Image (cartoon, rainbow over all chains, first blue to last red; front, top):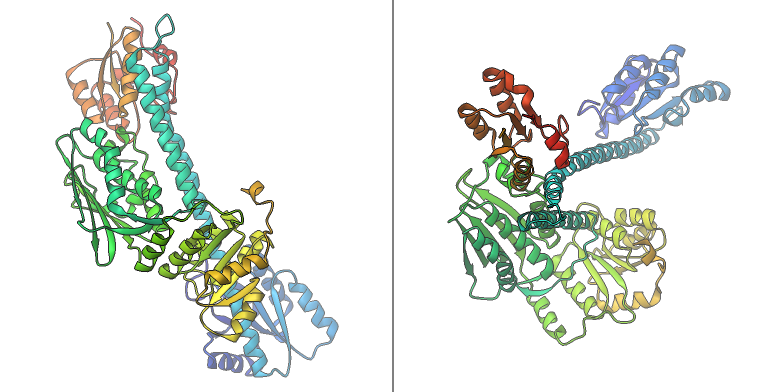
Length: 521
Length: 101
């Protein structure tokens, strides 16, 4: 692995006169880190430690050096192609050709004829470093993917393991039939209980995978969080009573209006309440509080149960986090619920965190969600009488916009027109949503966090080809934006604020392209 | 009647093992943790021990205790899992591993 800090240096080997010194001076003068090296062999030896680019004069390429360099370049990892700038000498075309051939296929060579113009050298070095930077990005991406693959393998191994206990219980209980082949009540109930448990596990897993791959399309509407809270309480009441756990509720006097998918909010609350009850011994208490704080909707689910060790708080939302927790496992918990909660909360632009004083002193889960803006509430009211069924001309649209208010309002308005619309807040999630849902039209803000609109468009085009209409939205008013947007793969460019009428016009302009969409889903 | 100590942290599985061995005429004593298992071993003798090696039970403390204090018992342990009887298992396979009078 290259040493940190060495990866952007330019190694310069030029044995004649003051060449090396002058080259270093010029490159250093524009802020590049140029290091003079004695020979090409030294360059070859330095490559494994990390290098951004190499500048050589042709005289430096003595036969031994050429073969050492060639060897070092061959041994680079798959992602690496060190850029090499060769300042050619007076030699004939044939000998120069031979030199280049000696390294060919092993690296990316730029030839600059001498006498060298400083501008040409600096510009070649700059583009070499940019190319190198891109390679580092690919390297990092590969490491990330490898880690993810490793996590997935670990996940599958644990999952396989965790399925064994319920399956063992079911198999043994099913073999408890009497001589007539009948099963007693107790074992039938055990089988039912464990089957339900496995069903819940499978449902959570599927939901989680849908969230992670962007396949859950939220159907947000303006809801009063207190209503969802009351509904979730009804679901949990029976098991709380069975376990002799008391539930205390404190709801805000005023409505707590959020723009959210009620099914998913219920799922969030259900998971948190089920956990709280599960981890609280008999005669314990679970509390649910729903209120507005600092302009956010806040849900607090607390209990005076087993608590969480301080070093486990951060990782509690990871999959299978409670694996080594005796109570969780005994209760048949798999540690998927909280991972699902976090993903669903994030999908709604919210946050979730866990607090606990430690083992034995209970814990509290705090979810915050953005309140619905007054514009959104007003729009929703207009909609109450409107037909929410998709119109005949219903199209699938993804809005990628980091300003939540702008996004939510647009989503609502388009949905009101009968379209199937989802909204996401950054470039990476946006790309994921576009690839997963294959919309008719995607409206993409150019200045997005995590991945800008240009990059998103390039990648979306790579994935989907022409099967999506990509519309860039920017407020910069830069004349350059339009050209860059088209180059990146956008079909159209509009200036902020994007209005429903603009989008309707565009939809009319671009009839459905992906008629094979259903088959692809 | 031979007695068997069941050490299994997953309640419904423990229940099903007790029922299975009970029907095969073994007297079962059940515990959920290694700590309780050692307590039972200190105060009584068992013809066999069915042991879940998973984290919440922890077979190591139980095996260490047996090796140090009742080495003759070590070969009477049936480990549930890949090292012994892989889960899920048939009731007949479990019963087949029990000692006969």
